[in-house]
Image (cartoon, rainbow, N blue to C red):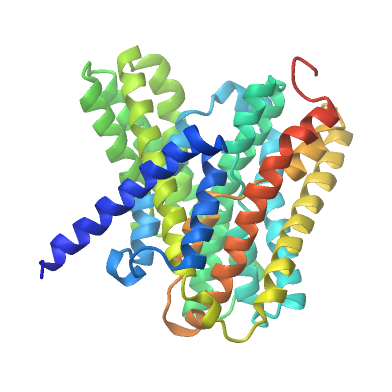
Amino acid sequence: MGHPIEHAVGIYIGLLLLACVVGIASKLVTHLPYTIFLTLVGLVIGLFHFGPDMSETGFGHELIFFVFLPPLLFQGAFHMKLDRLLKQFWPIVCLAIPGVVVSTLVVGGLVGWLGGIEVMLVAMLFGAMISPTDPVSVLTLFKQADAPEDLRALVEGESLFNDATGVVIFTIILEAILDGKGLSFTHAALEFVKVSGGGLLLGGILGWVAFLILRRLEDPLLENALCVVLAYGAFWLAEVFQLSGVIATVMAGLLMGNHGRRLAMSEKTIETIETFFESVDFLINSFLFILIGLELRELPENIPFVNPWLLVPVAIGAMLVGRAVVAYSFYWGLNQVGTRRPKAWKHILFWGGLRGSIPIALLLHLPSEGDLGKWRSALLLAGFGCVFFSLVIQGLTMQPLMRKLKIGQGTP
């Protein structure tokens, strides 16, 4: 019988191999977008009980948060062009901050009222988890269809910042549940401002320091290593000071991807950093969907308090209603007070608000002990149901919708 470390390493190698097999199959066999195929793989693992027990993997909920989130966030921010972001600044801010708050309240309220999650804070926690959007599949379609650049910037920028907002709200509600002291609106608002503003400032300082160092270097590997340290260090240091690690990492990534890329990096350095983080992003997305599949294996026999056949469709419906409220009402309001954008875009904002790796990471971050532990199975099932519907149904119907709306191929 092998040693525990040998057993664990063998599991990790097996998961990496499975990730590569999934990637090969999505490219050469099915031709489905990788995130959609990953979702199907997670479902198959859960239904047919493939793979090791989750306890054998050694992945704790804190490991998911501190190891998986930073590179995902940094990579997204590094690729965001600041000039495009500033051009769509107010729509992005409105959709990504008050929009996520509204979505959290709508989704949480409906899931609590109709889905059987009677503890309202737990229902709101689910709303915060499922509100962040993932633009990867949609942006791929945008690129293929030659969609307007402003629309791409709006979708990408909103996703980047609503990820940050959603994780901050999730963290505040989670701490309130674990403390057992409840949560007042005033306290939540002040806490949001504190952790968000502090994270923004800390990420800016760390990003600027890293930028000054990078200007003196001409070593692509060393500069890439410094960016890795920055991604994880900004996240960790912010959390140590009880600030938002998510926003700190996003801010640091924005600085590196704009000022750092333009003023401190050679073409070789940029290529090295992009290749590294894209590879890490591929592996982390693969791990997240495989791990959620492993978690789902035992769920059908272990979901107390709620009817899963009711909860999942209610959660999907709540997700769609919450997104519709935000996309249509905010888009209408923004068109009344600012630059008028094409009416067809609001339908893309609604149906293209796909859910992906961030909700999955937050679901896996849920603790299995304490009062929240008894709701964990229900939240995992409902959350995966939402992600599955979003990536598979919405993702596969986006291209026909864009053709129907005549968005792309040079149209405004």
